[in-house]
Image (cartoon, rainbow, N blue to C red; front, top):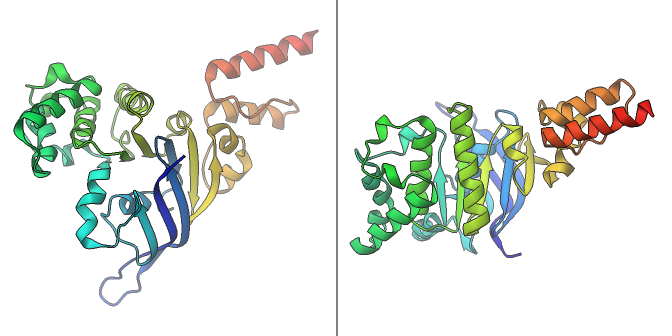
Length: 285
């Protein structure tokens, strides 16, 4: 598959304040994201997840090494807008991205700033709202919507600019379970049906389990990289860096500590329950 984002020996140091030394986040980060993929990035607080995400959209620029988006070197200031047309960002708090008093006006804000003609903006706004299941709310005030609905409006505002990739930085952190489910279902559908590349920064293991690929960061380095089943079966590695596997995997791991021999790649609760039932039935036989 064709790569859409690539980091080569990426280094980044946050500048110090009042003569204090800067804080190094990355020294030699190498990572590629393939076009059309759904990648989840995990890690404990301070591991560099959000810093990495901001490099994908040129919010931050490398202090060393390179980041390429669709083959464009993000360090060239005259190409920043092109980078941002290709990679849209959705942040943790949707209120920070909502700029208008009416939903459809808010979604139109991005395309307007790109200089898109009004008739096409109308088409893009309607299309984006339908894709996130919010078309019926197009004339509503955003401040009257739920957290999950607001986040879907924020996603619509990004996809109305028709980027090839959406990077979401912990988009469900401030949402209740229903809102989380709405957002994760929306981005999964955009990836499957519209082939939009998705990079999801999250600390929820059940969200990451829905991705095609999971990248685990630890102290500015890649600690694990593979399919969800490949990564989450490495329970002891995850524990060693302060993370937990999804609950079904943790249950099987705990039972294995007590003498069972259960597989550690059952991410779905129903799949795990079936495995436990079969194991119990076999032991009785």
